[in-house]
Length: 282
Image (cartoon, rainbow, N blue to C red; front, top):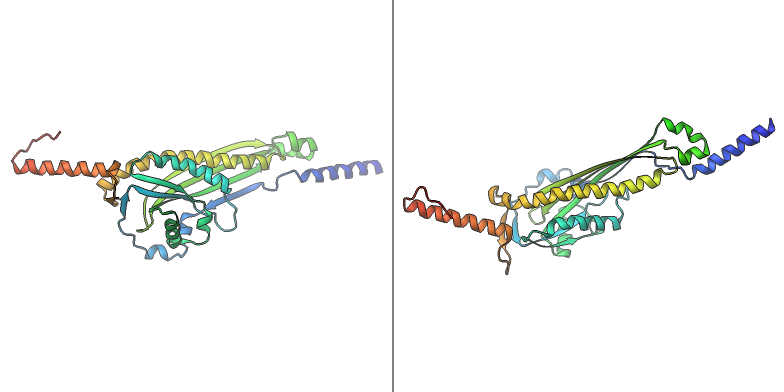
């Protein structure tokens, strides 16, 4: 009888020592940063704001930054943020109406909130437009039926009794700093699933969290590229912004489109004045 009790106590001790290696992060966890909460910390500020039509000086100087994480959460590691932002930066570089893109650490945005802080950062980095990347990632780890075998020490290491999922959403919103007007935005999503043992949960969640951000940013970058290409058409057709050229700037994608549109309109007026109704313009 005593030997049986000793065996049970030894088994419990071994299980207790193993618990130090078992994840304490099972259940649901969320990492997020809110663009709306950051830019409009006062609930009434958004209703009071009446953004004007922006005047963009071509080529545009763009700042790129992650919105700081909400509350006490750690969010994405600074090194990973910068690597992700470099991938987003690639979507901007191919357009000649963009002068340069400055990757800005979110540390510079943490000391304040709202457009006043955005204006300070804009002056510091000499940028006219800010692209803010916000995110929301939900990780979840739940035990499946196989987790019943976790009561053996070996089971915690070899039985895939945890179902892990990571769902990630990222969003880039591009603002003209002076007018406080949002020019366009682009989303990106990803979802990952993987089974693990009890001992492997933390490593898997950490690995899949970063992978989820990489996949979501890649998806967002594709959408962002499409929005950047569409932006020049929207400026021309929807009048969402006025444009002017900086000294030494010869035109570029937006400027050239507007110039050609003006030339076509001038030729049509001239044709009508001469009574030519079916004039083909080459």
